[in-house]
Amino acid sequence: MRSTLFVSDLHLDPDRPAILAAFERLLRGPARQADALYILGDLFEYWIGDDDPAPHLEPVFDALADLAQAGVPVYFTHGNRDFLVGEGFARRSRCRLLDTETVIDLYGTPVLLMHGDSLCTDDHEYMAFRDMVRDAQWQAAFLARPLAERHAEAEAMRARSRRSTRRKPADITDVHPGAVEAALRRNGVRILIHGHTHRPALHDLTLDGAPARRIVLPDWYETGGLLRATPEGMALETWPVT
Image (cartoon, rainbow, N blue to C red; front, top):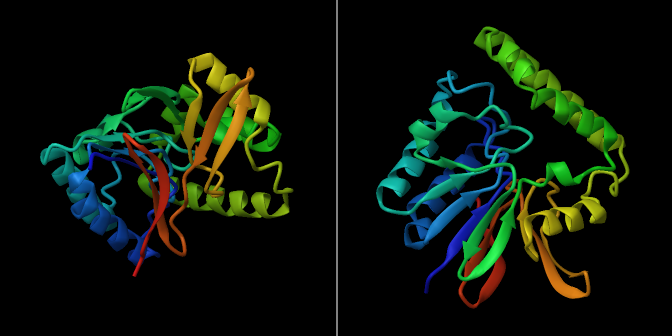
């Protein structure tokens, strides 16, 4: 049966080797039979630039490149942890980089793909941070710093993010319904697939009097997960880590 796979929020990190191994198993196993694989952001716990050799990720890069070489296209959308991914990463992994908002034809249905962080408009602190790190001048200045400094700053930002998230109400860190509706209207679609919130679910909506749907992808912490889309429909699936 034809299928397309969607994943996000793997947060690959050398401190979690089981997650690295689980994702590599997916790439060298079921993904080989897919029509395409879409990675919707936060593939890495953080990414400090394409000049980082990141040796612990070599098996994943090899598996991604092998998958693309086998004829399964792999697409990547930037997340809030890997917004510095660039053409160097694309060449290394053979992934195709997507825009922040991308509409695809999914078995005859137009579908909007996003990471999802831009939809959390009630989190004003995060939105200000997002504007800062997506600025071209900020990125150029950051990438000009030595690798060791960038690693230290990324670790510090990760710690600040964890502290900030813990003290915020749950609804603040979730998507805003108005932002979801605006994104659907802006792109002329009725189905949205995204990650970021770590709250996997299939939400049935009503948009301008007609049915719509928002699908949230699972994260990869206690277990892995993905969305499998076929010509017949969509379903969230778990992927074992051990």
